[in-house]
Length: 465
Image (cartoon, rainbow, N blue to C red):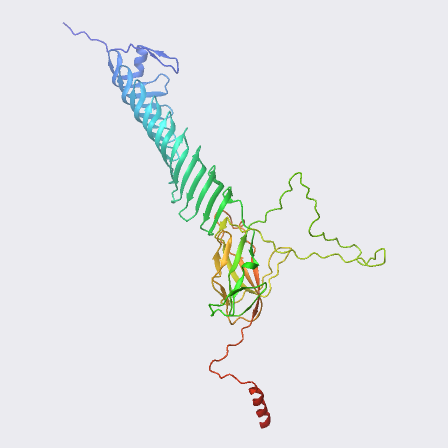
């Protein structure tokens, strides 16, 4: 009996594509699939092209569904290669996108959920936990430029306590809000710069403490957009803090005697105990409180304006008095800038007086004395708004007598938070000195002359003549 040839098994299940509304069955469905069939269903290895022409799957089938390992290719170039279960992307897999980004990790119903590693098109690598395609929980980002951020994620953005290590070794440790450094944080740079305090949107802003290694300055207080809100305005010397030793630096027992300005010293003496104040801005007068009468007469009467006709006589024939000439404004001293330390103050001795131009506020500084005429710790850093030249400045014996000016200059380098054009060094302050020439030291080997000895010598010379 001849063998009867049976046609191949045909797929009889009906497939309904929810996206397109296309219903395929029978021979039409068979045209979309190539592979193993058991009892009219896709079962085993096969390749299936979706009717919408966007998806194509190649891999394992079980009872007509994708299950096991397979590769899903999309018309835009995206791919997924990994585990399937119940006709869905479920389990471990690798997802790739046309822009070059990839994700390796756990998937649930086609979405990134669970542990995974995502590499963006920019080269940023995230390792952590995902939930429905969003980064959630602890994670680490390795940026393409070499920076590394370890921080919790909420709704796909860094939120919470985090640590950022820059490629060059700089380090930030503090609060993140929606991907920005906001809240409390500490910045430590490899160059030595440090800041601890408030941040807003990745910018230093609010109460904090900063040290700048480039200038040596440190500030404590409020910062605005990365810069200290308060900066000192000038240098000053308070009279009562100035003392010097007499009569000679070789006498360690010499008491320090307070001296008025200008100081009268002898060449070879020591000027010690000079305190230079880094002064803050003088606060404005208090605003009068409402309901309080403050119309008392001022302590100093106002200066009368000059008369338009100085030579004009009054009603009684007497010349009108000349208007009062206002005196030069006294030097005003503000409070110490206690919020700042590290300002570099250098002492230099200048020839002659150094009057202050009251229009410009600048000192008219004379020529600096030759190197070596002033010795000692001539450059010091401020601490809490003050610089104390405690270990004395020595004026050499060979210096000629006359009027000199000891001037304290601000020579602080430009800090990193400023620019060369914006950073303003403080105007110098001065200490007037009247230096007397030291008399010659008597020769200890020469016998002292008796009174009248010179006159006797002179008479003998006249007699010889």
